[in-house]
Length: 69
Image (cartoon, rainbow, N blue to C red; front, side, top):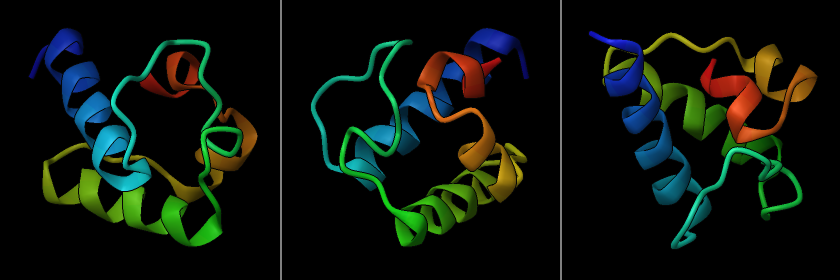
């Protein structure tokens, strides 16, 4: 899977879990309405799609751009 494909899967996870229409690199997970339960949901959603993201990563670097890297 390429970096571009992974970023698109990651974007889809954010859109679905946060129930938002758009995600930009500077968007912060928690400022966009996310909480700790949604962080677990996002992590699980991504694992199901073959993308590993540690739950702690969401709390350490919560912007889309930083996490997508």
